[in-house]
Length: 231
Image 1 (cartoon, one colour):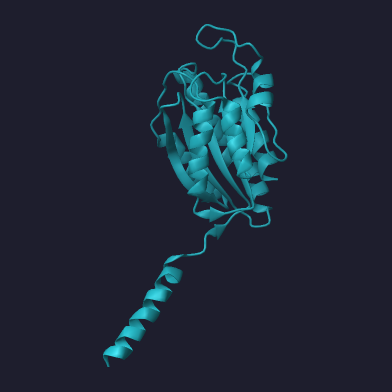
Image 2 (image 1 turned 45 degrees about the horizontal axis):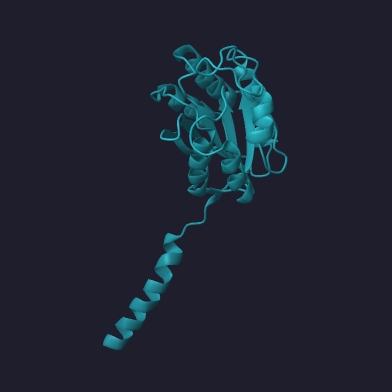
């Protein structure tokens, strides 16, 4: 009798990991939105930036593009970053497959607290987004980090080093540079921001960027970019 119990227990122990290891839900693309909240972005601009993402994700045109995908759903995580010491996951991974999902996500982002801190570490934002990507509960053949910001990397390791590490893992980095008329911390960058993003930030197969001429134009740029990334 004892021998029989031992065999039964061994079989149960062997089955347990398989039972606990649920298959991840499929989506068409995993998308981390990595958003600049450094000190160069004031309160009004931060609101415009958030509204841009809220309106873009919940736009019926974007939802329709999502629904036309092979799976008909995408996974989104929303990250904010500033200097190399500050990154946070504002909204965890969420599966968007219908209008109600998109509307609920937009409402959650509206209620999330905001912060604005000094310095701009694009590399820190990318490195943190890679870790978020690694913990995604969904499975997709395409993985994208969408970096938006209004300044060049001035904190932490070089942006291109973080980009290259992400690309080596099969992640595509797209960019949404915001062409602001204010120089970062009173200093003009050595390179126009769109050229900086082109050379130092975006990377991977099919990587692209869409320039927002200012914060007022940000929402339109986000919507165009989302449609292109999803489609």
